[in-house]
Image (cartoon, rainbow, N blue to C red; front, side, top):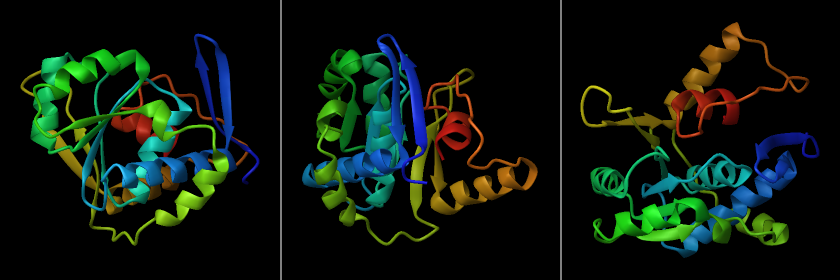
Length: 203
């Protein structure tokens, strides 16, 4: 259903909408630009940004490369971001304009990590996105897909590695008990760095 609505996000300036075709092109564009920035299969790429269609596109672009997405809590301090960058081994930190100051301060304490602006990875050139979409790599189910950090309420946050098979298994389990098809709309009120939001709303 390439021309159906895939993502609708309400923000301060109104509602932004993106079809499946547009989201696919933007994910391809993000994958290409991440590849140009030195990200390849197995590399960890952190995301520090508020919910948006661009967040979704970068996350999908990272997975398309066979790289590992590492979403961060947008409430982290620069010191917390720096600690988790070192812990995860992330080589790049994708961030929104709103959180660029925190990201910049964090990478000063995390050697070898470079900041990539979210807007630069997901620009308006859909044709380029379609071309760069061809960069997808062969991915095995056992490869790591995501590193999710626990909330840290009882101890320091711990990174939990989920493989592509883990994500597919959870999808199969959910669809075994919940019927969802092209006529449904799923409302998400959690930030996308939460595992539930990633599975129930994005994947």
